Image (cartoon, rainbow, N blue to C red; front, top):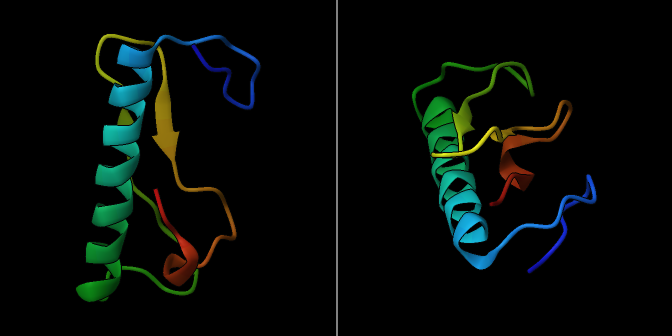
Length: 69
């Protein structure tokens, strides 16, 4: 088990789902840039982690070039 920034303890299965959504969200942000749908750091995509109350979002002010899962 591991604990994310909020201190919540999570099991390996949930961590795998979080990691998958993080990868999807990062890839979708690359598509926003590719198609010219964003300016600077404005605009984002978020994703809900299946079977949980968690969401993955791009932090404000993070450059799309620096964004990684």
